[in-house]
Length: 153
Image (cartoon, rainbow, N blue to C red; front, side, top):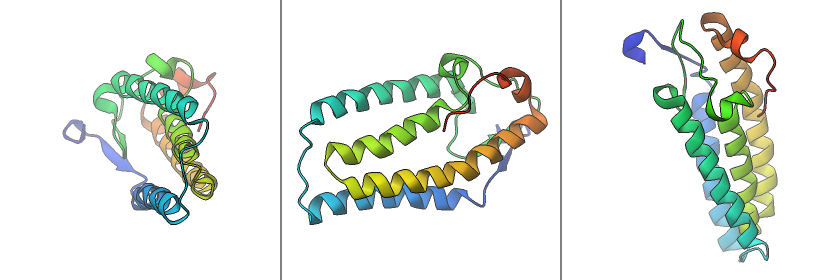
């Protein structure tokens, strides 16, 4: 996409997002090991939900195709993807991440990690989503495609 004239926005918050996700896994592992957390009695239900969420993630990624990236890469004048789960909401992949950040710790009764990183992730998305949407509105057909869709984060 960069070779086609795309550019990155939100680069200043990206290292914090990566650090948050790395710390999430460190916190999860540490909480489980230090506090000797076991599998949740609801582990089978949480595991099924987790598998469903991974299927939703694959649907998001295949729908976006070459537009998928962990960074916010904007290709001016691109037609915004509005197929797959993007037919129903603006940011289904962010929904996937939000659910994972709750589900994974709950599978292992790591309640501190579930609460702390849900709050941190919501703070991150409160910066990331407006940054992404502003850039998309400025140089793509984003506004026309999504003016009536909910913004899920």
